[in-house]
Structure formats: C-alpha cells, structure tokens
Length: 352
Image (cartoon, rainbow, N blue to C red; front, top):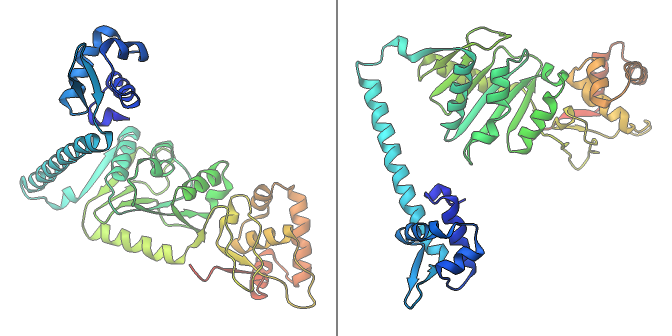
C-alpha cells in the first residue's frame, strides 16, 4: 500500500512493526519481521529520511514510528505537488504539440490502426476522462473493444466520472453480455437500451471521440480518433438524442409507484425501469410469469430471446404468449405488448 509513496515492501513491513510496537532495536525488529538483519540498517535509514521513524536516545539504538497520520500526510502532500507539476508539464507540452505548426484540418481526425493500437487508444480515452464517458455499443462485437474498453470501463475510470452507455437490444440475445452489463450498472454505470443504434462510439468528456472506421467490423482493426471539431459536436448531439429516446435499464431493480405492483427481478432484461401494473377490476391478476413476459413483449424481444431470459422452453413461451394474446384480444405478439401497455399492465418509468 505504501509503495505509492516510494516505500518498498521491506520498508513497509518494518514500519508497520514499529507502528505496532513502542520502540525496537535492530535485532528486535529483525526477530518480528522477515526483513534480513543486514538490510535493516538501510531500510530504517530510508524510513528516517522520509520522516516516518526516529531514533530514540540510548544504547543500544532504538527506533520508533512517528505518528502515522501526520507523517504519511506530509508524504502525500509532497506526492500531490509532484503530480501537479507533472500535470502542468503535460499541459504545456500538449499546447506546444498543438501549436508546433498550427493544427490543420487533417490533424483533427486521426486513424488508429491495428487491434492493439485501437485497444490502447480506447484505454487512454477512458483513463483521461475527468467528468464523463459516453458510449454506444451493439453487436457484432470485436474482441479488442469488448475486452479492453466497454466492459472494463469501471476499472480504469476515476471516481466521479459519469458513465452512460446505450446498448442495442440485440446485445441481450448474446450469451454473457447481460451479465457484463449488469456488473457495469452495479458499479455505477447508467445504461439504456434501443431497438437499433446507428453506430458504435465512445466519447471522453467533450473533447475526444472514438468511432470504428467501418460500420459493423468483425475485427476491430481500425478506428477514428476525433478531436474537437464539428464532427465531434455532431457525435455528442447524436448521443444525447438517442439517450432521450432509449429505455432505461437498472440491473436487479424494477421501478414502483403508489398504484403499481413491482415486477419481480427478471434475469438480465428485467432491469428495465418499467412498471408492471395491477389489472383492473374484474380482471384475473397477472401471474409472476405473465408479468415477466409482458415486460419482455413490450420491449419487442422475439420468443427465442424471451425463452432464454426466463430460462423456459421455446414451446412453453409460445403457449404463454398465445394465452396472453387470447386474454388481451390481440392478433399479434407486438399488439399484445401494445395492448398490455394500454391497459396499464406495463409502462415506462416516468422518472426517466
């Protein structure tokens, strides 16, 4: 843990032993740690130089830990000053880089080639974000972007960075994708779903964007890195338009209001922030199974996808949907979803 302050494993072990004890000689310290006796003199000298320990007068020489809260705080403040200086230098070098000959139009759009280059660029895009990451994702999935960028965004982003992703509906028909998205939502990511999306993209803050060079790449071996320009503005506007149209998804949670009966958590798709309402007077109450099917019908998923989400047989799902259609007086499965919504059995969450 103290390695971030420049203290190695041996130094940390010796320091923690001194924190636990009153004061110890070199021999006593060697007996309670795994640090070699011959190394301890140098280890203690480095800790003393950093203001973490001091010598206690007397013979033989004893060493004691200084108050950790104040001693470590001093080192943290020094490290923060170093980080600020490096950040200022990076900003200065960036300004020089942009001004070296006057950035022309070609430099506002860079082509990144090779799967490794794309993955590395995506990681850098995520790591540099200070306020927001926005993304649009859809099948087919290319390995570089799946493994290194979208699904791992929570692990590389700083605290306080808002993450918003729009996923195409077909994402939830692919094995493992629902679980990945639920994990991202659990880490604080905001997710919404659209039946179809026009393209994939990642936007970092308001000044960088990354889009595939081809619309639906099977192998993500080339991308376009977009710097501040009208194209980046258009990408940002497109994302916000689609975000307003998309249906919210909250893993493991269904929205409820005073007049509503909450739908039980559905596997994967059930995180849609929608409400499954009580049938009106004189109507037979919906079963738990029917509530789930109504939610998925309203989303427009086909029978096969509903069967996978509910862990049911295909024919069983078809029978349940047919029974719902008869009950609703619907002539098609899509109409069944619409009529269920009209009856108030399901509706999008108004809070979103």
